[in-house]
Amino acid sequence: MKNSTKDTLIALLKYPGDLTIASQHQWYRIPVRSAPKMVREKEIRYLAFYQPKHFKEEAFKIRWYGEVRDIIVMKRKELFPEQKSHPRADEGYYRIEISELNERDQPILCRRPRRVLFITTTLEKFQNAIEINDVFYESPLEEAFWEGLKAENITAERQYGIELEMERKKTREFYLDFAVFSRDRNIDIECDGNTYHTGQKDVNRDKKRSNLLERHGWAVLRYPTEEIRQNLQHCIQQVKETVNRYGGLQSATDSTDYRYLDEGRSQLSLFDE
Image (cartoon, rainbow, N blue to C red; front, side, top):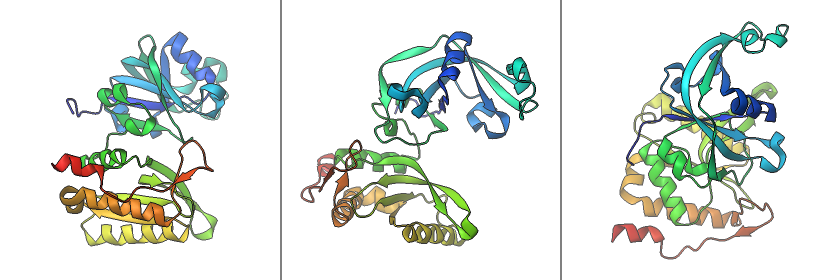
């Protein structure tokens, strides 16, 4: 990849009125308390927008983006003088000023509706993406696994957020490296990089997390760094076998359509020849 520096933020455009502000007044707001590091440290160069269900026929797409010109911290009541009685009127917001909005020739599609707040990525990934999972730019380990899944036509959701019920009916959100949806049981695939998954504390945390997911009906596959680096084809083959064991792969666009995966010769072997 030519440019590996994250410089592009995809942000939730919650309501059509927010698109009006971005297009006509050329700014977008993010609460200071929840702003990504890219915004806090002013490393953002481009801002793009994810449109959720309120956009109806234009929902679950990324169509609009603009170049960032400036970032200013302001109180909400300064952004919206007519809303001085708003409960968050005195809270700080980053006002991200952008150039004129540009429209992609083809929007980036989100084939399986999902919640998105922020995605940090590179301009190159954003420009080349066809669907939302192409946008994510994570560790080299995850990038290799993603390319492996795509080579075998295994549809998966990257950094997929799910809420699970904990003790005392409290819920907690978890983000899965890859979520694969099958007829009988969905599958969580985790790429365990050496940096964050080698200490005993990390191992114990991962085990508790896996147990919790399994209690809520998920199958969990975990792959350490060396296994992915040395035998990615074997890892992808295990994913295929697991998908078929649980009834086949669910279509990303039709929840009633399932297909079994060919467990024969892997396309990945082409990269080894």
